[in-house]
Image (tube, rainbow, N blue to C red):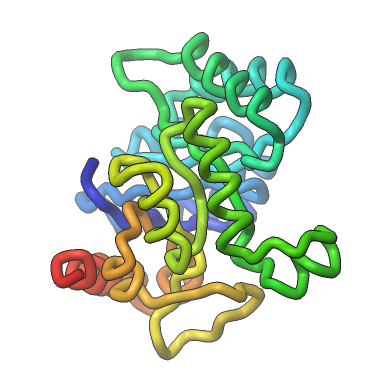
Length: 239
C-alpha cells in the first residue's frame, strides 16, 4: 500500500469544491469528503470528483446499531469511493456489520478500505478523564480501539501520528494508519490537540496523512499540496 496525502475538502458547497479542484487538473489528488460537504451536496460531489480522477475518502464516521451501519455501508460502497470510516467505539459487532455492508455493496474489483476512528485529534487527556470518565491514557484508548478494529476485519484506523508506532506494534505493519492533525510548522493548531508536521508524520510511520487548512487555506494550494507530499515523503524515507 503506497503512502499518500489526502486533502480534506471541508467546503460547504459543490461550487467551492469545484473551484478548488479545478486547479489540480492533471494531478488527481486523494481527497476527503466530510460531513459538511456530503450533507450539502449529496452523492453529486462524489460523481464529480471521480470524474476528475480523484480518489475519495468518504469521512462520515458512521456510528449506529449494527444493522443500520451495514445497510448504510452497502449504499456508500455503491458510490465507488476508495475509503470509508466508522467510529471504532461503536463496538466490534457494529464494525463487523460495516465490513459486511461493504462486501454487499462493492462495485468493481476494488473494495473500499474500511477505517475505524479511534480518538479524535481534538480530544486530549483531560477530556478523556473529565468527559469520557476513563483513567486510560489517550494511547491506551487508541490501542484498545485499534485492536478491536483489527479483530473486526477493518483495514486500519484513524489516529494521530503520535499513536502510529503503538498501533503498528499491536496490529502489525500492514494495518493502515490514517492520520489527521497535520499542520505545517508555521500554521495554527486551531481546534486540534495532537498535531504534527507532514515530515514528522512520515517519520512516525503514518500511511496516509489528512491535511486541510494548510492546503485549502493557502494562497497557492497546489504548491502547498506538492510541498506537503515532498515533506511527508522525506519523513518516511528517513525514519
